[in-house]
Each structure stands twice: as structure tokens, then as C-alpha cells.
Length: 340
Image 1 (cartoon, rainbow, N blue to C red):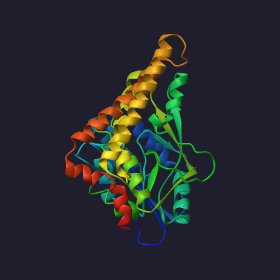
Image 2 (image 1 turned 30 degrees about the horizontal axis):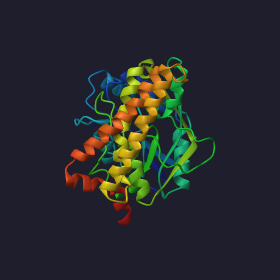
Image 3 (image 1 turned 90 degrees about the horizontal axis):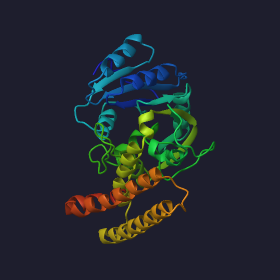
Image 4 (image 1 turned 180 degrees about the horizontal axis):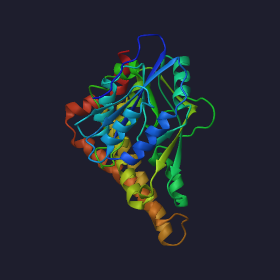
């Protein structure tokens, strides 16, 4: 780790931006340039930590160049040898000290007042567990019309221009209260996997937010924190959307299990019934398209079916899970709530 500086010991709002990155040097450079333009008032103390998750491209050189420029105060970097976004985020939490931790993706461009707005909200809501802002998709090339229906696949988040309390938050630009995330024991134990290298697994950010919310903390959507999430052309290809929705389907049952309040049998029955109904619905839509009576594209049918397939795989994985591990997962967020 290089150039690590800790926050001054005062009562000012302190936020650590954690950027977990894997072989995305070009976009990381753009993200850091945007961060260097932040207009932050003196009453907000902030740092930036880049977590290098075994990058083999020019990531190290990009970060070193920005450190040398000194345009970003308290910029540092650290290597996380365990591959995967969960490990990288965990490293970011352990190796920072601020009251708040902001997870900024390496393909996100923050508005110039993003840190200022995050600090302002954090100061006004010290007991909030987590919050996020507007995540606007920035397409490299215009996507097909049906792709716009799947903003969730790209971490899109826009609940309007008013403060609100959603059920969950996306990982891009997620700001968590350090006390809240530590209270959930997330640092020591995660149940849902997240991206590992180029594998499109997802669910780690959902788990973090659900556990924070179930521990008794409020979560908020703050539209004043706005960022642009760059979506390269390759990510609007059918193969990518199929893979990401397949992964989302797998994590669905695990996410449900985190806040489940009854037996595994009841969860299993409900999930099988729900997924069976979804399978029939997809079959009917596909049949209508084949007969020329549907208004969906074949590619969209494939994406929907990938999510349903993922749900079936998720059910199978939970059935094969070690009984002790399954007991630890089911209702774990509720269990945390009862202990706080």
C-alpha cells in the first residue's frame, strides 16, 4: 500500500471512497480524473483507496500517475490477492477508517459535487445505514430498445428527484455507515458471491444492504448524489445480458433466504412454485412469438429465460448446500436484527 493517510481526528464528516478494480485501467483513469475534479467543502474529510484485485493491465501505472499528480487528496492503493469483488470490498472496509465508506465502481463518473452531496447527507442522517444516489446509464453505443427494460442489469438507479427509502440499493455509488456494516458481521462472513474476475456473478451488494437494513438501520435514496455509469458496447450484446441475468437468477433465492423468517421447507416450496409459474410464463411468451402473435424479440425471451434458469440453479444449489451452512444463511439478516 502506498501514500496512505488517515483522517484527522476531529468531528467532521469523513468518507472513504473505495474503488475495487480488475483489469479496467482505461475506465479507471477516467473515474479518477472525475474524482480529481470534486469540489468538496472543508468540513468533509475524504480519501480514495483503489483496491487492485490482481490486475494484469496498466492499472498500477494509472493509479501511480494520479498519486504523483497529487490532484486527489489522500489517494492510495492496495493489492487484494483474493480474487473477487467481495474480497476487494472487504479489503476496502478493513483498510479505511472513515465513518462512511463509498463504493465507487471503476466505470463510474461522479458529478463534481458527488462527494459534497454525500457528505452533506451523511452529516444530516448520522444513523442511516446506507444510501445511494442516481445512477444514470451512459451508453457507449445506443442499445436496442428492449435492452432499456433491463436497467437493473447495469445497476441503473433512478427513483426520481425526491428523497425516498427503497427496499434495496445498487452497488454503484453505494455509501455505507461503517458502524452499520460492522454490526452485521458482513466483514467476517458473506453468503452471496459477487463478481470473480470475469465471471458475471452478482448479489454481494444486495446482501450487504439487506443485512444493514435488517439490522435496524434505514436505507435511503438521495438523488443529489448523481453519477454516470459507463456501459461499453460489449455489455449490450445478447450473450452478456443472458449471462448477467442467469447470475441474478441464481442469487435470487439466496437473497430471499437472508431475510426469510420461516423454515427452509416453506422457502423451497414457495420458490419452486414461483419459478415453475415463471417457466410457464416464459414458455407462453415464446410460443406467442413463434406463432407471430407476440410483441417481444427472441433475444428478450432468451434473457428472461436465462433469469428463470438461474433461479432453478439457485434452488438446486441451496438443496445441495451443507445443512449447517444453510441454517447460517436462512434468516441471517433477521438474526442480526435481533441482536441489535
